Amino acid sequence: DVRLLESGGDLAQPGGSLRLSCAVSGFTFRNFAMAWVRRAPGKGLECVSSLNGPGDMIYYADSVKGRFIISRDNSKSTLYLRMDSLRVEDSAMYYCAKLRGETYPTYHFDSWGPGTLVSVSS
Amino acid sequence: HSVLAQPPSVSGAPGQRITISCTGSSSNIGAGSDVHWYQQVPQTAPKLLIYGNNNRPSGVPERFSGSKSGTSASLAITGLQPADEADYYCQSFDNALSGSPWVFGGGTKLTVL
Image (cartoon, rainbow over all chains, first blue to last red; front, side):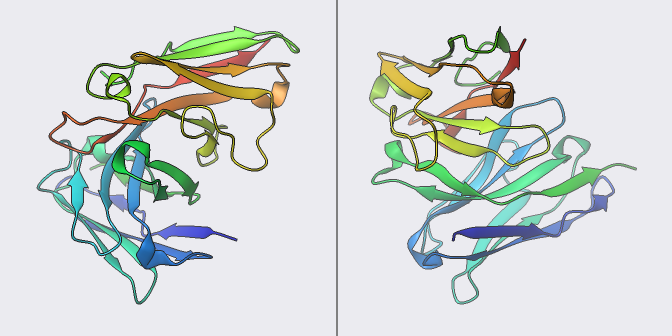
């Protein structure tokens, strides 16, 4: 069974930092692109960042560019999201998701973790 | 606003058929990118419902189906059940964005009356 489990969500102050982790099992982690998707209260889903299997092709949403860093440790089957300069609008449930597809235009998120909650407030 | 446009809400009675539209543009759906659909029941993670425009993952009932034409796509649910009450999102790939190319619609809340 494919399993993804996020951790690291917490209450942080504006301007603060957090590091999210996602431990996976049930598939060959290094072979798949992975992503962080968030859902803020009252809003829809947003893919904030993704990276390919080797970790050398990375995308960031404009809303987090320059503040968040995505990375992966294929030896530990773990995905990370370093979040700096946090803003109130970053408050959301953050999901780790596995990407699947033949080419970029076919990619979809076929497995999701239960999420970890990030709250940014003074 | 979202790159992919969805109606904020739809509703239907048990047993009825509903559809949810997803309207994109020439840089995403119209460019040939696949459309995928997700179901998010309150307080749970999103779940893949339809991938590659009209394919169901194992375990998804045949009551759920997808279609795509031009710059739009639709999700249809037949034989509505109370358990179908959830938020539904379409997703595709956009080749014209400066940020993340995997984009979602704004979501549609389905209410089963």
